[in-house]
Length: 127
Image (cartoon, rainbow, N blue to C red; front, side, top):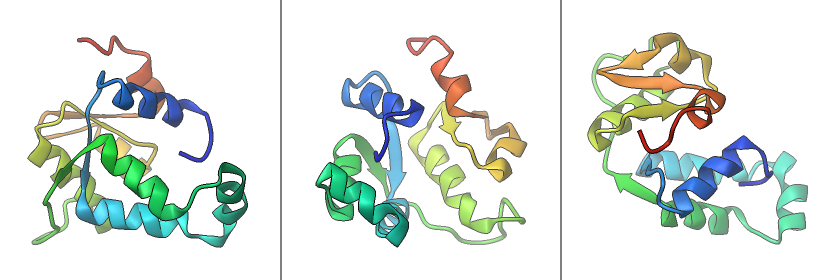
């Protein structure tokens, strides 16, 4: 949301409804928190956006799911990443797109492919 790279391309696909982004409430809250980090403030000023506005934008192009972490961690090295897996399962997603090594190391979870943004963008979106 802050720069026009490959993630921006994915956001544009979501705006066009060519892909569906799925997000859990806790992920949305974390997004807003991360966007509030001091290191992003100069970029937010350039874009004339607030963390709240960008979180609202993310919500507008996403489907939201009520998911929470519980029980034994799925990813023991980083249990905070479990929310992405749980949200994908709840959403009946086909892919999890991430650059997080803990997720990528799984390669898939309950039949959901875990890929980098490059891998996702280089496939036929309509398939």
